[in-house]
Image (cartoon, rainbow, N blue to C red; front, side):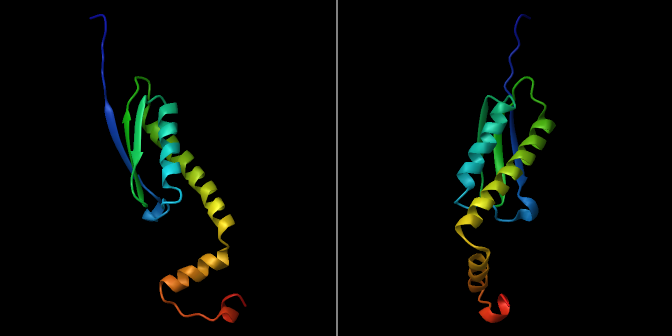
Length: 118
């Protein structure tokens, strides 16, 4: 046989640490695009990425020389680093104090400013 052809698609799912809602609307599209780029750079000619706030779905066309376990490990490691850099951007827009107040208000927790920041 002179030629052999194959087309193998893999559906990968992984969650955020402790299923926290890290991937909100403000960063989700950027993270998904970054992960798709990582998959293509790893040798997958096709990659589609999606999912809600707490997990990610990745559909890839496995290239002939892709090592699946290595690719998944690299995607998880590099995307985690990327999300952390985006978290830094978020905190530059909103101070810790503002975020903490919003958290307390969202859950109806009464507080007195003089005791919170002491």
